Length: 396
Image (cartoon, rainbow, N blue to C red; front, side, top):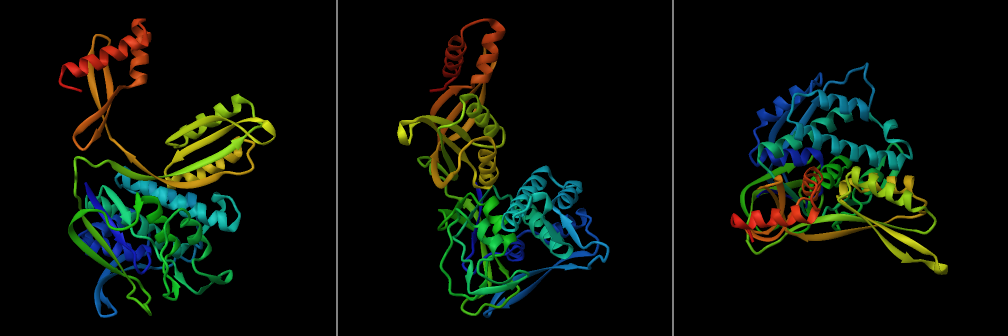
């Protein structure tokens, strides 16, 4: 598996990460073509070699000619620009996820609806280029997984439209929830909201470098000059060293709420909506609450990027007054689906693998249920024959 590991020992910003990916091998011309496809008038992407603390690094610059007629852009305007670009669907989807996460953070800190959040025209163009080109660079480099070091937010305070604010600034602080941060005495803001939005959306793990065979290293420079450390960010590209005995790992967010004053129909409807909105799993456990009241524990597993939206859905659909949120690391078997031909038709079978070894095999329920209804046989008959057919061709 091709992996990109971002070493953010001096913080993270959109321009630093983009420069590091170009320095690691993504052609600048490819990203300049991406900018042209975004159809942003007066916007140009350039890159130059520079130094920070006498260390070589690449610095990118998004040159923008302001449009006097365009002062602000809302999220809907930005989404329209990205969707209209003739880019790969996966690039568009990931870019929109990052921008929505960024807008959701701004909406939270300003106590407004996400549709009301507006970005200054220059800042919006800069963020569009940083985010879309970052995703496009990962695709061009063939990166399949992103991991990141703990992020140092910086120290001290910065001046902004709201006055003097402690570091990290409000939007960045909201984005860094459930994310490991590192202590740092470097004065100033080291992690920007754009940098935090990109990494917390795309990175599947935060921690030390994984076991990997490094093929390329890129160094990106930020605009400011560091006081106690060079203002640079490194990205390591390579392949994860595969061990057939190892399991896969990822990080999920767990949302929990205890409810004792809601009809069962409402709880079932909430579970359906959560699953339809991107939850990885939803389950309800009977519990006895204070004063001996029977209740239910609603538990939701989801990706960290979806946690805020699903939390809002829980508050909207249930009577709970609070939702607990924790981060959990999962060890899991790699999944693969294979078609099996049976006398009831083609049935998919879901396999769980550790490396190349199949440890679990289960017929897909929906396929079996559809076949059982069509042929008017018991569900278990279809399931048993599917497993038998799979084993006959060399399965477990």
